[in-house]
Image (tube, rainbow, N blue to C red; front, side, top):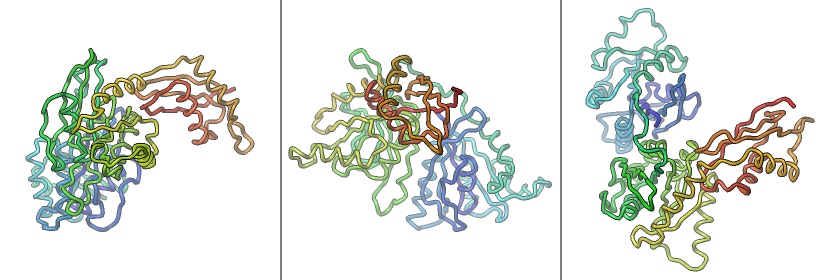
Length: 437
C-alpha cells in the first residue's frame, strides 16, 4: 500500500506548483489567483525506491462563510485524515497570516507527521530569516522554491524518511482481497451486507453514511476473502458541494490494497464523472475490475433494457472494455450471490500465466494476419514475446524498432492475446524493448 502525502495550506502559496514538481507533470492548473485549485487532485510519484501518492488540496480559508470555500476546507480535512505525511505550505514573501495560524492549529491536533514548508524562498544564506515561522509550532521550517525546484530534493528525502515502515498486508497470499468502491449512495454498504449475510455496517439513504474503509475477512466455498468497504466519495448535494468529484482518497487506499475492484454504479443514474475517476485509478494500478450495476430493481425494463444500459455504460467507460458487468439489486438480492463467482474468475484471470512458446505462436500468427505498418521506410519486427508478470499480466515484446510501435497495433495484439488466452476482467500491460535482429 503506497503512502499518501497531502499538500495543504491557504490559497496561492504554491501548493499546485509543488504538486507538479513532486509528481513530474502539469496535472494541477496553476494561475496567480487565490482559490484556483478547486478540487483535490491525486497522482502517483516516485523518489528513489519509494512510491507514494500525492494529493493536492484547495486552499484553506478558515474564517470564510462562503459555502464553496468551506467545502474546499472539508476536502482538505479528508486528505489530512488519510495522509501519512502532510506538507503544510506557507509563503515566505507574505509571511505568517491568521489563516496560517489557524491551519497550523488544526494540524497540531492531527498527531500526523507534518513538514512545515516555506515556499518562494530565493536566498538560503541566512537561516535566521525563517525563525518567525517557528511560532507556528510545527518544528523546523523547510525553505524551498517549488517553481525553481530549489531544496525540493532535500524535502523529498525528509518526507520519505517519515513513511510508515510496515506496509505489508496481514493476509495469506491466497486470500482474495476485493474492494467495494464507488460514489455515495450507489449501495456499496447494502451490497456488503448481503454478501456477508449480516447488518455489518450502517445503511442509510444519506450519501456518505459509511465514513471509513472497513476490512472484513470471510470464507465462502473454502475460499478466503477480505472485503474492503469504502466510504466512497461524499457529496451532500450537487449545489452545496460541487468540488467532491475528486474526493477519492479512501477509494485510493482500498484500490491500492485489493486484488479485485467492484466498481459499483447506480443503474438509475448511470456513469458520471466521479465513477470515471475511481475506475481510471483502478486501471492505472493494474487491478482486476468488475462493473456492478446496482439498484437494477428501480429501472423500468423491457426486453431491450439490459443491452441498452450495458451499451451506455461501456460507452462511458471505454477504457474498461475488458471488465465484466453484473446487474444486481442489494434490496431484492437479485444476482448478488453471483458476484463472488465473478470475483473468483477475474482474480484467476488477473494472475494467469501463459506458455512462452504458445504465446509466440499466437503473436506470429497475428503478425502474419495483420503485418505491422512501416514508418519512414522502417517496418516493425516482433522478435520475441514473453510474459514477465501477473497482477496485472505483463508482456515484454522484443522488437527491432521500439519507436515505431503504434498504440493501435498494440491494441490489435492485445485483442489477439485476449481472444486466445482470456484475461477477462484484468488489464494487460505491454513493455516494448529493443533487441538486435
